[in-house]
Length: 105
Image (tube, rainbow, N blue to C red; front, side, top):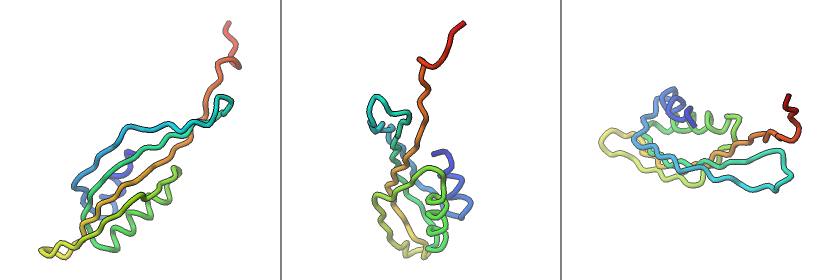
């Protein structure tokens, strides 16, 4: 999640608004060794078409699965840049540690 701002800056996109929604844990059952979490974010950014596409490519190539839930694009008539509103879902996997497998001395 922390890399969103850096990715936008790298591709010369200006983030005007960035809002994180508390994570949602996806149940897989008590016997599962992994935990899936879904982090949602809403952001608004400004940039050229090419820079926005490059920014989205960086997000898609992250180790976490990134899904674009919605996208809204409009043109800023004053400077010709694009205003882009995005809702993203970012899925992460985490291995659970099992206390029963740990021996205490």
